Image 1 (cartoon, rainbow, N blue to C red):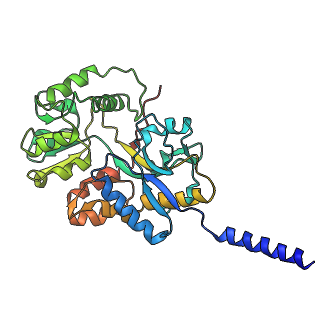
Image 2: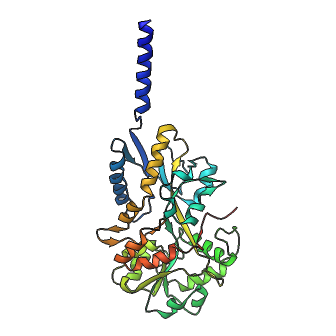
Image 3: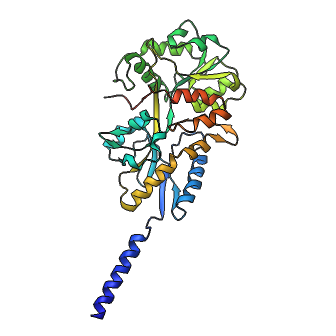
Length: 342
């Protein structure tokens, strides 16, 4: 009888110990590789994580959401929502309970809604992005322009990588979106006339530039403005004090405000206690304080569009141009680009 009791006590002791033990020793994660400084973001994430889970090591992994390969071995990763449906169809990501998102009210509703499919939430929004007109405030043609067609009489006024293979499809998408009044228009519509105008507005010798080269060319005094992402303005020095940023219609129709969303998600293969820790890590990656710190590096603003509301006010007090970014991000009519329908 004593032996039986001893065995029962031993089993209960082992069971209780197992329930209280954290079996997760490491988590792998991948940030968006196209950030101005992905390594700095990783450092901020790991510093914050060490305060919460000092016994679980974070392991950095490189993964690009635009590639066709599955995120094997990556527990948590950031992906572009334009790939949302493909990620779901391939079974690479799994949904999370909306109640697991910390301070969800601080996230722009349109960004959260873009990740909601049939009542399931496929990630937490982190960054926003878009093709904006970044322009010299002394150029009244650009100050007054609401449509690219307003500049039809101009030639070689903008630095645009109109023939750069990675950007040209984006411009075609922007044209179709404005023309058809759909953030995610069907493929196959004609955009040839507007692409001809974009080519006309583009300054020769810069049509093949990458985004960084476009921004640097403008800062060097070339052109009166350029089409680019907001974070490209971190490269501006000589012209930053008299530079503005706004949306502009890529057609004769009114501008359809639209943004890309980068979100952090969890791998579909993650289960159990590991899944719970991944949710915790996702919230750190999307945390307002982490994103605020990321927005200023060595005293230099990074001009990132963030998916959370709260950082914009303090950033705008230190860097006035952030008030223009706030206006872009807070537009309640913003629609998220999720990719063209087949």
